Structures are given as C-alpha cells and as structure tokens.
Length: 470
Image 1 (cartoon, helix red, strand yellow):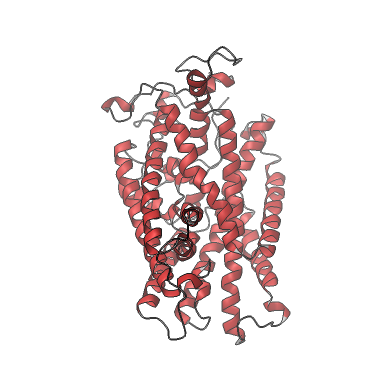
Image 2 (cartoon, rainbow, N blue to C red; image 1 turned 135 degrees about the vertical axis):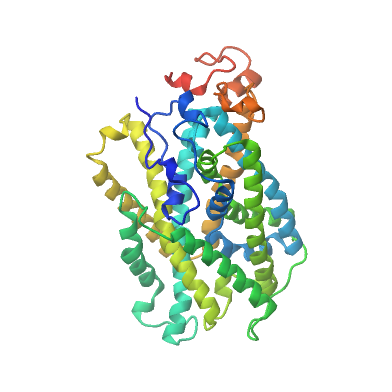
C-alpha cells in the first residue's frame, strides 16, 4: 500500500508567515504506518528539508506562543507568588526541553515524521491510538478556549462602545452569547470548512505580533500603572505544595509545542539531534522570556485579584489595552480554523484507518464527510463555550493533556528507544537505524516472565511487524 499522508508537503516548510504552517505541523497520521524506506529517510533523499536553524527556532517559538499567554499571571497567583512561579517554570523547562530532544531521537530511530507516527512506531498500536485521540481532544478543547477568549474580549470592547458600566445589562444584541455566536458563524465557520487553509495568509504573523504586544502592554502597565488599578494581596509563598502543582496545567498549555516539534525537526536542512538541542533551547528561552515577563508583571500589578484572563483585569476604557484585545481576537479568529483543521485531520485518519480505506480511494465521500465533521465540531465547541464562561476550567483540562504530550509520551518513547543499539549522536546516524522495539515488548521482557503474550516478543522486533506490516 502506498504511503499517503493528508496535507504533507514538507518541501514548503521554512521561515514563513503562512497560517497553514501550524496545520502542516499537526498533519493527519498515515493510513498505512509502515516505516519509510531508506531512500526517503536519508538526509540526501528527495524529501530533505529546507528549513534553516534560525527558521526552525522561529517556527518552534511561533508554535509555542499563543493565547495561553493570558493565563500566566493567574498561574503565578495560583502557584503562590513570584518565587514559586519562577521556580516551577524553570524546573519544568528542563523536562520540556528534554522531551523535545527525546522526540527528535525517537523520530530518527523510527524514521517517522509526525508526533503521532513516532508514538505509533515506538510505543505500539494502543499507545498510538491513545495519542491520536489525545490530540483530537486537545485541539477540541483549545477551540473551546478560543471562543471563550473571543467572548471575554468582546464584552470589554462592547462596554466601551456602548458607553455603559461594566456588568450592566444592555440591548439583546450586546449579550455575550449572541456576540460569540454571531462572530463564530460569520468568520470562524466559513474559514473552517475548506479542505486546505493555506489561503489564510499572515495569521502566524498576526499571532506573533499580538503576543508580543500583549506582553509589552502588561509590562508597561506595571511600570506606569493607572490610578484606578489597585492590586490585591501579593502572595509571597504558596499555601501548600498542591497549590504549586495546580499551576502546572497552565504552564504546560503555554509551552506545549511538542506535537509540532517532530515535523519541524524533520524539515531542517541538517536534522541532527545535537543541532536540534540548540534550536529548542533557544526557542524555549525566548518563550520563557515572554511568559515570564507577562506572568511576573501581570501578577505584581493585580496580585491575587488577577483574572484568569489578565486582559479582563484592566479597565475597559484603556485604549492601549483595547488594541491588545483586538489583536487577541484577530489571532484567535485565525487560530481556531487551524486547530480545527488539525483535529479534523486526526479524526479523519482514525476513521480511514478503522475502515481500512486508503485516502486516495475515498476522495468521493471526502467532501460530505468533511462538511459534516466541521459542523459537528463547530456546533459542539460553540455550545460548550456559551455555557462554560470560565476559561480557567477549560485550561485545566487541556493543560492536563498538554502535560501528556510533554511528559508521558516522550518518556515512553525514550524507554523504548534506549533498547535500540543505534545512537543518533554518532557520525553514522545518517544511515538507516536499527528497528526499535515497542514499549510493550520492553515491558514484557523486563517485567512479565513467561510466554503469556500471543505474539513473538524478540528484542529488536519493530512494533509494526507485530501488526502485519513488513
């Protein structure tokens, strides 16, 4: 069976402002998960990447930064103060960077090019399916968070335009549920239906500009605060260790770029683990500076009274903050279709694999299925966003899934990959590596004595061979 991926043009990756970049990074898993042949895997083959080292840093930073920036001041408050928040971020950064390097190691060990395909090849079929489901749920939850953010920012902007005090009930057309629904149907739904989303130019550029602008506003407002802004209690120590860990989902949601990292690594001109280590370290330091600046200054400005969305803590009449709200709305309006495209692609891959139908043989029904999937996805996320107005609750859920992408799956891949005799640190790493045993084979051979498994568990057996692939 031919190796077919949905939206998998690696040759176009590079330093660009194309909104479809993120979608390509989260492309659908292949229907046939057989490993690539030696020619395709070779750095000198036809699929050799074109992304420079600096371009890879930019793409990773772009994939990392996003709407999660708004929640970091509240994360500092939840953690119990500035010292606890900084310590937590610095400690987690070690594991975040390590996970990115491990994923690159496993990608070369398995000759796979996307996050879910690496998990399939290294950890086995069951873990691979769980990973794909987690990606779908994560993108679904993030779409809900985006709609809530739109509603939060629109409430503030409408209050200024209507010249009404905050919290006052205005005309029916200023109601939160109506404004979110109108914006979603007018802008988000038409952008989500097309099969390809490469036409959304400059979306990534707007996202980066908006993120940096929000950070700059939060820092400036801390240095020169408005007179009407009075901070709450400035916590200096956490109430308990549990309070510190409650801030982890927000930090994981902000730093989660691991799903995108595997395609970025394979798109580089020289996909070497050592070079990749420098790329992700530089990218995470840049992201840390942005998140740290926003978290510290936002927390010190409002203290324990800071909202889960820091922009909601500022007065509605502040024009500089209103511009930041407009940037965030534009960024989210273009980011929702991208995340939806990624989730839809994963669901499509799961469905086609379950049906056993190759992509090229199912084109006739693709349009009808795509429209139905888009409508169901859109309506469910909209309904949940209308009745879950607190973004903190959504972040706590999708932040937990982000922690799986950062800690759980890379740890499983590392355990399996260490069973292989191949090392990407050696000069001969350009040759095709030895097959890597699945995580379940390692667990069986180490922890489960006796022949209780119905399949031959020979060390070095590639997990794909156990599922009928050559």
